[in-house]
Length: 72
Image 1 (cartoon, rainbow, N blue to C red):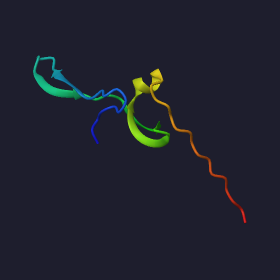
Image 2 (spheres, rainbow, N blue to C red):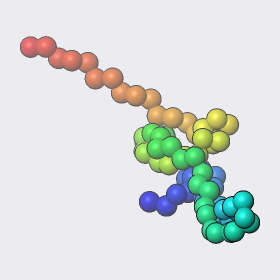
Image 3 (cartoon, rainbow, N blue to C red):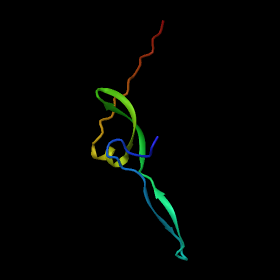
Image 4 (tube, helix red, strand yellow):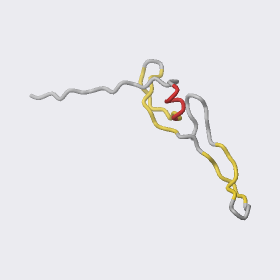
């Protein structure tokens, strides 16, 4: 699965590690993705969503289903 938010499309960014001696090597910054149960077309689905989308309210989380224990 790609490291991309399914809501906003945010993905990895690239740049450089820069040492004290100014040596540069490539690195990547990844978005803070969380696997969340989200309502999609009226059905709950697990998707990867960045925390900024969760905080801003762009995501409607699915309700947890509580199953009652049946005693016989």
